[in-house]
Image (cartoon, rainbow, N blue to C red; front, side, top):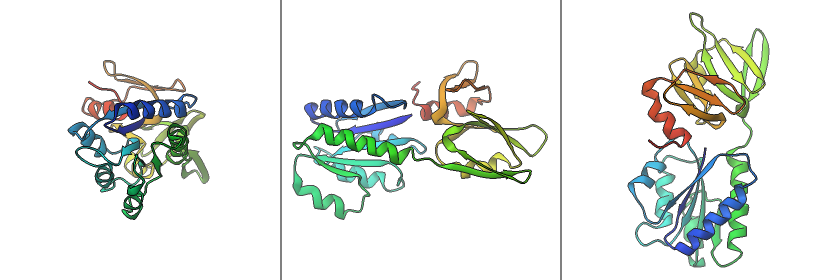
Amino acid sequence: MLNVIVYEDNSNFMKKNINGINRALVNCDIDYRILKFESYSDALDNIIHTKGMKKIYVLDVEMKDVSGIEVASRIREDDFDSIIIFVTAYDKYHNDVFYSRLMVLDFICKYKGYEDRLRDDIVASLKILYRQRTFIFSYNHVVYRIPYGNICYIEKEPLIKRCVIYTINGKFNIAKSLNWIEPRLGAGFVRTHQSCLVNVENIKNVDFCSNVITFKCGLSTNLLANKKKKEVRERVGISE
């Protein structure tokens, strides 16, 4: 789930933001949601501090309470992966933004082809966030390279020190523990059970009553522990 966070207190430009974002994502095979904030809130703060989410921030520099630059500073305290796009009606903030070392993708003036520029920036953000990464391992003296995006879930086999990697193209064995695998896969994966790691981006739906996770390719697993349900809901963008 891609989360696009819009921080804007002008209703007209909020609509322009939504239009530009939808235009950029309409033909992409990506599940996304747009989260709108007209001021700083606990909900926004929670999103900033939630790890493992793919996030694009569209921040108005000049806001009534907490400025977009201050919000970006809070984001960068421990998040260097999310994309930040600044927008403003005033070019005078340009130097403040880039001298602040906030690793900003772009600085857009609201009155110079705004929606087209925003759409282009969202497309560029997707290329950065979804760049192909590969999980490399060996098994029985054969080296395998599996793109992260092809992995649905990884399940520990009972009684033996081996896991099975279920992908959209088949399954592969690996003689490693989940504890060894998990830190090597990055933030796109979530532990749903002591015996299962799941790729959040490949989830189609989750039945929290029957504890079944179904993936876009048709695979499914019932390894969903009760104590993991809250985190899974947050990661796939499902509210209580």
